Length: 202
Image 1 (cartoon, rainbow, N blue to C red):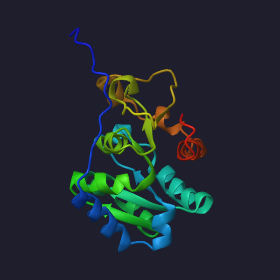
Image 2 (cartoon, helix red, strand yellow; image 1 turned 60 degrees about the horizontal axis):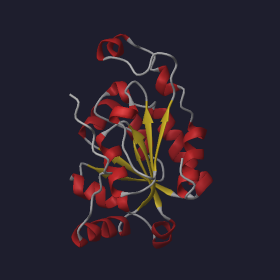
Image 3 (tube, rainbow, N blue to C red; image 1 turned 30 degrees about the vertical axis):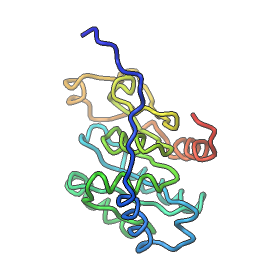
């Protein structure tokens, strides 16, 4: 349309009441030491199944975060994830993770603000994480992060291009491989998380 895009980075500022919610929520689900060390938020869902990193990778990622970094994870789950991740979510429930289900967005934001890092798909929750200012790793596949990606100084976008990404809705409907997402490896996500949490940026 010829309208220049704004250059400002979206930010969300929380009230003291919202911050107290996060403090109480964490206090009832983790030890003082775990909260002090920090937790990592994972969002394995999104608005479209076509944009989801393989759920088994999130399982591996949650295990690695605890084993390698010594940090507890929070799984952010909404109705959509319940519908199409089903049995995988039950497997994740058996892990040493906290679950945040069906919370108002402002409460999700307050929990995110308390996290050391966030990792998730191309989704609204990923934009929310970037807007509260925490280290955010966005996993992109068929969509163009130049257009749809979150913005911020502490945002890293991981994306592979097998030669067909980004693609149109029509092309996406015909695609049954999602190579653009499958090529993103768990170790790559872990390494980027280490760098972001150490303040080394992208």
